Length: 97
Image 1 (cartoon, rainbow, N blue to C red):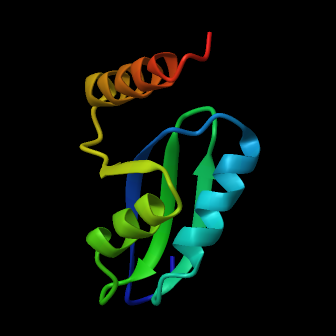
Image 2 (cartoon, rainbow, N blue to C red):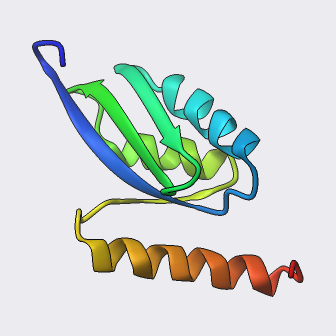
């Protein structure tokens, strides 16, 4: 990681295909101060390296504006499971088996 940068992990909801992760990575990457954005479809997480002047609310807003849900990862496995459960429930409520 470069000097003056920090790393944030976001939990992502609403991705249905790998193309969604690419769309989210592009959206996060467009935020001023972001130096690297990696979105993992399978873990439903985005790992973002950004300068300290870029805050997580800007990253979350970028994901939301792209049409997906996001929250700052608390870093615990149970939090991740709950977030994924909520995303699956929302997906099923859209009428998708």
